[in-house]
Length: 426
Ligand SMILES: *Cc1c(COP(=O)(O)O)cnc(C)c1O
Image (cartoon, rainbow, N blue to C red):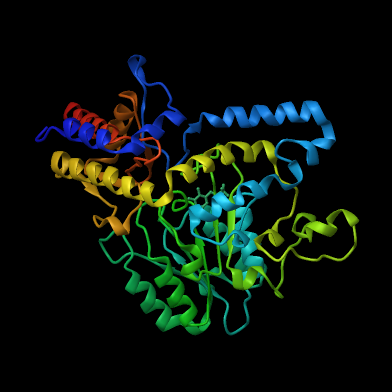
């Protein structure tokens, strides 16, 4: 090693009071009785210790009250999701009436497209990034086809320039300036899942609105990661899942943002369910739907209490730490990892994620400059050494030092392990 990264890292950890938050989470064991170096929060966040208590309490209240727990539980089930609302609103920079925790990401994306993808014969194209997460592309193409359009003509995919791994925002603007008249919806990621590139959401929303399109964001990799300002971004809608940086656990209920200008009064189409109906009158069981004047109007069903409990535990921790402090620590963590990778492994890897802190979140994606099988073996060795990252074809390793529970020392350990694996392989 050219520098003593571990000493540097330990100094940074010691100086940062947020380091203590790591103890609020359960870290998986690694080899040799040590704790694993878990850098996979972009895929599944760690378990907040408090989640066990919150779930256990719901068992107790169910046992104690049966159906009456809907109103008598310590956190009444009828309005359980409402406890997450202010916490979520602060995490994404929204008003409380703009957010709701519900469903899964892809379900929410479909519900939002029902309301905000309103194609006409002249204007029906959808803009997404080339190489979008498959579920998003499936959802978009199926919506196009549902309305009788063909992806061949109506799906506009924007790719990075030749030989580059990231998309330039001016290229999105150029495409919109050229194709804008036929674009009904721009669906863009907050952070691209593979490259780790973060985008200026307000600028993209401005470009989309400038040509008369609706603009929605997929925040799967941005929520709980970037210091989002969703309300100010002017986005029409956004969706996310909660098992990545939000630590809600596998398949945890996702979230949805609907901008205030639509949330209060919406005359467009909506797939409705009884949990979107006016709360005061919900149990009057009247036949006609009266929407709640908030993002909750898009809810279909009563809240999954057991699935929301771990998410509530995690959001409380976010609230204590604060998104802007977390973001600052994330820049320090990712900066440490970036520098150590570049200095120690610079000629053996390519870092795909932008170098500028404003253009990335927690995640750094690298490509190992070796044959695919050699690179894969190297990744396996990294895993065996107790560093948990993930592998995505073609030959990309993603690391995410997460500010709530990772340390600068984790970053140093990952680079050391990768270097050792590389030299073994050579
Ligand atoms: C993780 C992820 C999803 C997952 O979708 P689910 O409906 O929660 O299974 C979708 N889109 C993107 C971009 C993701 O990163």
